[in-house]
Length: 417
Image (cartoon, rainbow, N blue to C red; front, side, top):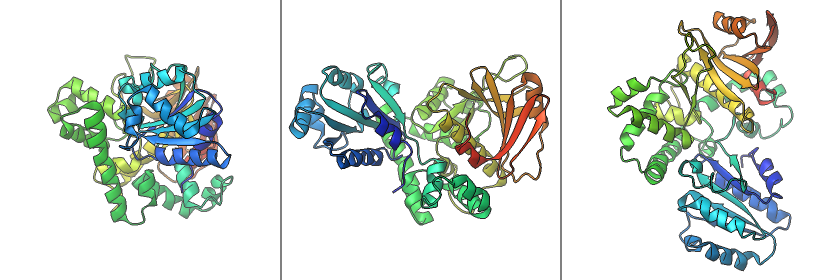
């Protein structure tokens, strides 16, 4: 069993009356996480009920709010209990349905999950304002992966292990960059089974999420768009060029990108700018939620391995995902910086008035070297600090009044922003 860090925040939220809503990609492990939470409650003597809209036998209970409450009362009685509802996106007007039950003030705590972004069709967000808390469960994070692969022997010493066992650390990093974090993929032993599993996950996404939720009838055009984006990970997106290449309208391209974002396939990153005349302000850069899925879509899943250029962009994608995890419960934003003369900094994190420019180097650096683009950003914006995330080097230096810190990627798991 792969332990999930989201379990504890969910446990901490159990005493709250608010509905706990777990969203995330299909096959990310939401059902398994709910079962873990259910087991925790039952171990502590609490009454629970698990229902899923994927089960035909459970679907009749969701025809009305009264009908669902009767079912819950039958199983749990009139006193405190915990109700798990899986695959809630299959319920029409799910937000209003849950709101009605919540406002009746039953003595039950509801934990609800669903694939895709339920806010897209206003099934949850607007209807449940003040009545819910969203928990986003991604695929297995790098930290969860490393802890699992080291059999949880280094729970409080993971950074020490990775810094000492450099060869093993590089092996685990390569594994994660190639195969990503879908739980079923990680648990499979052979390349053939990993490939079959990731193929099933992606086909299920195309057939169930796109066809069912978005009613997309040009699935092939959508699939072609995602393939192009997979080959351009970490690079600027040209909407007009995509429209021309795919033979679909510009609005359709943008709609498809939004669908992919809302169903946890891609993360568009927008540019940081203060001077619109000198800096690029429109084209986003695309990163993928899961590296293994990106590799599968681009035809690079497994041996013979990745080219150095691909590895560099995937490492950059990994660093973005680590930054996003660190900021998941905060309002800070991640951007990139690029000028019209092509000076570029990979990421700029805005924390209030504070800026942190971040360069990513998929290299074993021998000494601290600061390249011209980052020096240009430092000169222009005078941030308090700048980061250069790399494979192994840990060092610090100074540029003007800016402290420049070099550190290995895994320190992002523990470093405060």
